[in-house]
Length: 351
Image (cartoon, rainbow, N blue to C red):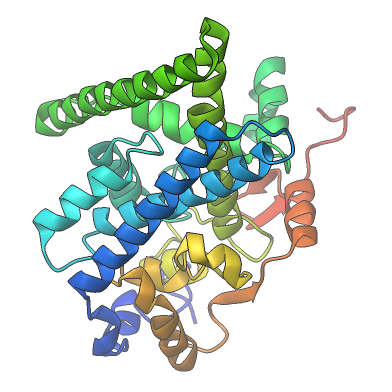
C-alpha cells in the first residue's frame, strides 16, 4: 500500500529507537577514557618507532599500523563529537577536538558536515554529500578532466583521493560559512594548523638530529606524518564507501526519502576480523549508529542485535570481503534515482 507521495507504508524511525534497550545508552566515563588512553599510548609508540626505525622492510608495516591507529583515534573523536562517548558534553567536546587532531580534522566543521548533514539526510539525493552518486545526465555534461577524476576516485584505488578532496579539503579546510558557526570553524582551523605546525617542527627537529640535513628533515616529516595520514585517508574513504555504496543500498529522491529508509536501509553492518576492530571500534556496525547517534561505540553490537530482532531482514548485514568491494567499485559508477539502480559508465560510443 502506498500513500500519495508513492512511499510504501513502513515503520517510522522512532519506532526503532523506542525498541532499543536502555542498556544501549549506558555510558562509562572510565571506559571511555581507557579507550582514549589506550589508543593514545599505541599512537605514541608507533610514532617513536617511525622516528627511530629506518629499515626498508619495517617502515611500510609501521605506516599501515599508524594509519589504522589514526583511524581508531578518529573513531574515538567521531563518537565524542556525537556526544556519545561520555555523559559530560564538555568532556565530549574536549576529547573530540583532541582526537581529531592526528587526522587534521576541524571538529566544528566535522560536526556540521557529518553529524548534521550526512546523518540528517543519509542517501538522500542532493543532500548527503558523502559518496553522492552522479547520474547518467550529469556524466554526459562532465568535461574530460572531471570524467577522468570520477573514474579514478570511484575505482578500488581512489577512495582516499575522493575523501581527501571532497570531504577533507572541500568540507574541512576550505569550508566557510557566515555567522557564529563560520567564526568557530575558522578559529578552530587556525588553532589546529598551529598545533600541527608545532608537531611538524618537533618531528623535523628529530630528523635533523638523526640525519643532519634538510633532506633528512623532509624525509622524517614525510615518514612520520604525511604517509600515515595518507593511509588513514584511504582507510576512512574506504570505510565510508562500503558503508553507503553497493547494489543493495538505494539512494532516494527527496520525495521518496524517509528517516527509516535513510538510517535503516542506507548503510550496512559488516563483519571484520577482530584484529582490525581493535583499532576501528565497531565502526562497521553502522546501522545502529545511524538509528541513534547517542549510542556509544562499545554498545553498538548490543543495539544491532535488538534491531535485527525487532526488524528482521531490514538491515544489510554481511561479511566484509575484498571481492565484494572490487565488484562494487567495478559496477557502481552512476545512479538512476528514478529506477533506484546503479550502473557502469556508458560505452565509449554512448559517452
